[in-house]
Image (cartoon, rainbow, N blue to C red; front, side, top):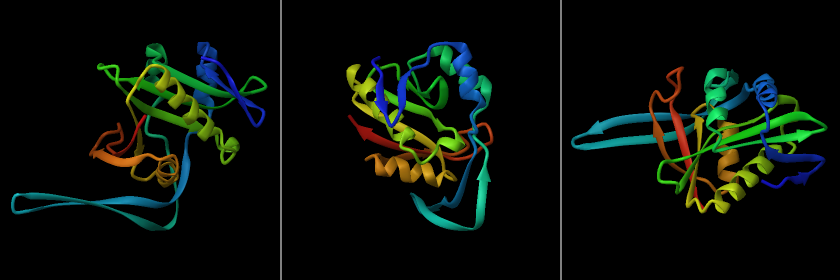
Amino acid sequence: MSTRKRSQFVVRELRAASELTSCLALDHAYATDYVWQVDMREEGEDMLVRFRTVRLPRTMQVAYPRDDHLLRRSWERRDCFLVAVMEEVILGYIHLRVDSSQTKGWVQDLVVGKPFRRRKIGSALLEQAIRWARMRSLAHLTLEMQTKNHPAICFAQKHGFVFCGFNDHYYMNRDIALFFGKNL
């Protein structure tokens, strides 16, 4: 994949296990003032599911829901693993896997290290992952995130992704995952 410069950093494919170690060393935690609260109930034969944005009484610090072992396994599979690099320092990464039909991509991880956030690095990583997916004729891309990850929800919506589903107890810590999709 060709590189693309943006504000003095380059987005390129992950090249070595040592770079993966740098990805793992990034601060993956995030802070949020809002969560998507889910309300599920049965009414007769209907199942009603409602999400609403709720402001928290104070800022919540949230740990990343994946462990290092899963990230290493993702790298070994290597469908698409891109990094943002500036002067050999890893600023962030995106991991995208392709489904068995070879028509859909699934962004499992999109992380920018805490000191590098709010500099459009996440946008550049996502743009290059979309470019990678289009070059391989993928028809759809899905982003996954926790209901607590309001910054990621806003990011997904800003980039044209729309809510398309959820999975209860999806992560190892039993958090709910939200899915936002976009046709390519």
